[in-house]
Image 1 (cartoon, rainbow, N blue to C red):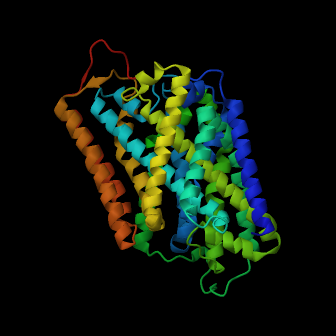
Image 2: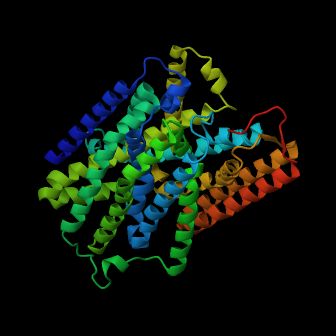
Image 3: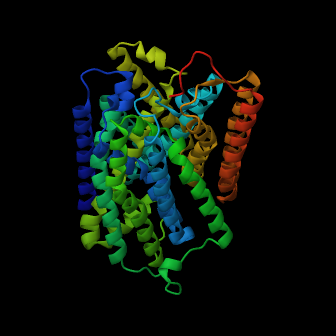
Length: 495
């Protein structure tokens, strides 16, 4: 273990200490379901903006996706950041102009149930949301275990990966349990600073890296890519659909907005941090694509770390620790957001909100702890069993995460269109048709993921996203029409 490795481990340990201190400072005098999942709706623009950037710039689903596909898609990956920014802007502008904030809408399923009184559909939305965030959490912790075992494997060769996964799980549980959503958003501010420093260090490394023997100067670096026109068009269409619907269908987006003090705080937070969002999504693409042109093609994050260590000089002594710690911050920011979102999803009006709100503070804190331990315990066992195959599933799992959220998007968009109307009832047949659309769309996504994993392609997963959107949306319209949707007498508006 080199001096720079010791520096990295020390910095990571200090960062975790800071996370716990910030979570402790955010801890309220008493614990309630509203306080734990929505921070008592007291989040200001600074916390909102920092959380938006830090949690969205995931190590696994963003940074490592760019790292592992830079040689294939090249600068086409810039489309990801531009469309994600556009999607967030549209989402936040739309929801802050609607009578949503401060209302009793805490989750996507609650939004739907305030429009169509169908518990079956609401619970299916919750189930798909939970499935998506479980995979997000699993992937982030998997990447975290890779980073941790990169350093500890020489000392603990047996079961190093599983131990790393379990250790990362316990770290996240610890500070999320202490501070809830308020603690998560407090730590996001610190994590954002480390993330931005890492992105800047990555750009500097790309500029000073010594070209490798495999480097090719035949094509200008900004035109270099392996994907053909058909693959590029399909990828761009998939990304466009994903990033324009994702903010509407991802629970963490709603949770962040619902926790804000006011619509003005939400929009001000987005505007003040917009430049950081673009920086965090665009600069890594430029850096990785430029590194590919200089002969650096990385299959996973440890290969990047090895390149940094072997470069010597300023790269090994300064840039390497900054990048590793910043990437770790991106990991923690997404993992803790996923864990708190899982708890929020199950605390909706149709699942466990009632029983949770009737619990004493002590029992409520115990329930959250048991839930987190069971969830991450199961994920650790799954990782230990499937450890040898997880690497091959990395990209397919990313497609599975976001594909599932596309399935839910038509129901969210329909509900937003009906905000202000009285809640409606539909017949059992209508409810079953809507449910069928969700289930068929979800199956299409998962089957496509399995096919692509076996064939080593991304095509079916990219095609499955618009197909599942159309399937879910078509069954929704059919279910509402056949179900004879009608206002419920004696009820107020959906808001």
